[in-house]
Length: 385
Image (cartoon, rainbow, N blue to C red; front, top):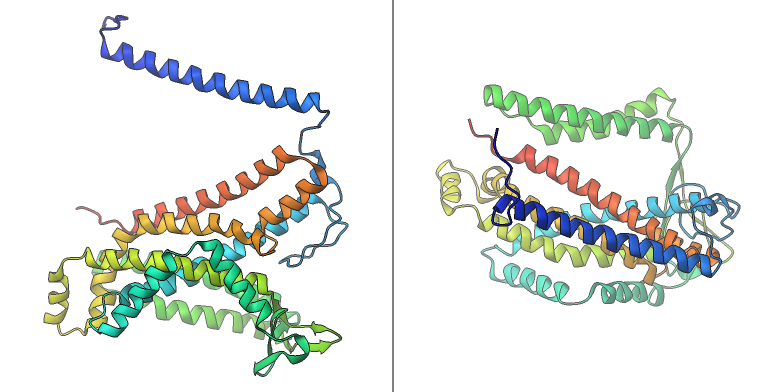
């Protein structure tokens, strides 16, 4: 049996001692802060806890993906804010990734004009604070567009005004069936992806996953609508009084937030894409040309699959930053989780609980993105045989 040495001259002993000291200091600091906070709250007769979440909120929310009334609880209002934040994050990340990829590829174009325009875009967007982006787009949408009575009508049923964008909406019993069809399309796409990868590893043959998946996304919802009797109606917006009714509504706040976040983040994604493509050896381009592939096909089939492996870690950070940057929505009045919890804080005075709710919401979303990207990174990694 190995003899335990408690001498400070022993490296293991010193290592354990330093860790115990650091852990003790951390525990003491946390205990002091919590104890001091509770003492100050008790001195000022401020109640703590989350019981207030079951009380009636009593304030209006401009935009909501789920039904919300003034008589609903604070907890329901928080759910509305989280869903609004998730909407901005999901739609914005997809759009920013698409735009950033296009600009990143354009940065490497042999065409001088395309190359320089992409470079100017990246430099301009990255060096203007995000908050200025949001203020600019919000003022542009609210002050330079006409009122509802003089709304622009570029396409039948679509109206642009300083109240936002109104587009035709689908209604009827078949809408819920179509959503179920979309869910089946997602599941079928995931299964197809795993099957295609397994098939390629076993036989070396590839499958047109994108084309088949696209067919799933079209066929499944249409099939669900047919099975439900095709009970679908297109409801167009109508001007009544001082505003439009019916149809789907996109507020100026949501549009400005998405424009600002997408255009700003796309500049960073463009640089990630550019550096990822440049990390691939030039011999890969020559190999594609020797096979008779066009430059576009070489990029899509040979270069990008290798570049993606380099881009994933940086993309993960950018996606998480996008979600956290969406908290600036409070500056232009979009009801995200920060805006709604701030209103709740003003009414209840529960400052600590309110901050903890915001922190937990963004922590959960960021961790979810990190876990998903880690899984994707592992799936894309080269497997040594």
